Each structure stands twice: as C-alpha cells, then as structure tokens.
Image (cartoon, helix red, strand yellow):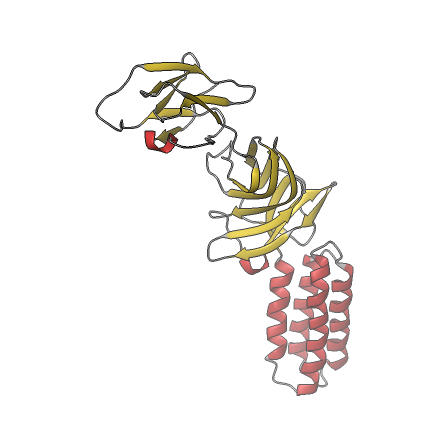
Length: 301
C-alpha cells in the first residue's frame, strides 16, 4: 500500500454506520478526540482482498499506519462491527464518486439503479484515447474518462461529469460520448453549462469523453444570418427551410449519420447559386456558400 491524501473522520462520523466508504489505499488520520479521555489503541488489520475494516461499534478515531499496514483505533467500545471500504455499496439508487487516480479530484458522479454486489468503482483520466468521430472536437487538451467497477449492478447508471477547467467554444453543443463496441455513441441526456455539468445514461463502462460539435454552432449562426437577410421573404423562407432540414439532419449526425446533413447543405448551396445575382446580391450569395461549405468541411463531407 502507498500513502495517499489524508481522509479525516471525527469519531461521531462512525457511530451507527452500516458502511464506511473510503478511497482506494486510504490514509486515515485521527482528528481531534471527542470527549476528554482516550482509551488504549486496538490494532486491527485491513484486508486487501475485500477491503473490509473492523471498527468499534461505538465509534472512535482511526489512523492508518502506513509503516506496518495496521489500523489503530482509539475508543472505549470494544464491540466490533464490520465496515465495507469499497466505494460502491449495494442497494438502490447508489451514488458513487470515484477519486481520479491521476489528479486526485472527483469530477464524475455515478448513480446506479441497483447494486446487488458491492464493489470498487475507479476513475482514471488521460489525454489519450480512441479518436473522436469526424465533426466532433475535444475541449482544451482533451480529457478521456476511463471508468471501471467491480460492483455487480442491474438497470442503468446515470453518469455526470463536471468538466470545469476544460474550455469549449460553444457549450450548448456539448455531447457526452461513450466508447461502445469499438465506436463512440452519444449518450447525452442533459447538459448544464451554468454548472459545467453534462450527464448521460449507460449500461456499461469504458472510456467517456465530453466533446463539442462545431458544425452545429456554425449552422445555427448561418440560420440566423439567413433570417436577417434584406431580401424578399419568399427567398428567405426557401433557404431557411433547407437549413431547418440540415439542422434536423445534424441530429442524425450525432449518431454518426453525417451524409443527410451534407446533402441538405448541398441543396442549400444549389439554391443560393440559382439566385446568385438575381434575388441575392453576388457578395451575399458568395458568403452564404462559403459558410455552408465550411460546415460541410467540419462534417468531413
């Protein structure tokens, strides 16, 4: 075992608890004693195999001794109770927030529908992983969230990631993706840019990433530009309808079907070219075509 960040517990925290959840390889240091008297220390063993700790049922102060791998307990109550140190307990609607083995933070929160066998859920972030699909972009240096669990569970798991510290150009286009069967799948259920949080629902674990979709942001800007054109309303309505179709097609692109979005944008370009120097000024037409072609490029079309 190795020494990690200290976890401080007051004695009262240990009273009437049926489970005690701690990070892997914990270093537990005694806080200030509750009461005026201290009883003799009782040394107990931490078992690596099941990470089960026995502590006094009446509470006490814990200290993990990294020199000999023993647990020292200060407390007058010698009636022992068993506590599970794994961070994913059994039960319904179980919440687990594993500590990142790399940074020491806890940016991921998981809520299990049902855990039938307690286990350890782990998280390790990195800047390398499977390439994200064409048209999507990692924020900042790019963060991959590798999640595993030894817990036995059924139903679904809601997974929420706090991406604070990772910069994105347009958070309204963020997607949470899960790497399943050698491909990335969009599992997003909600996003909250105000709290830098994005959530999704899954049934298994493997790498996750938070990505943005620049094509969607660029297409939304193009829609606004068309709506603000100083031309006949009929032309605006026709162009806008084609862009609406492209927006709808981009929803399919989120699942990997980019061809329909590209086809809609090509139809938009054809309409603009047909009206070039007629009902659309040449410079306006050229700008609209350039914007549409940029979006097609972002989609890899």
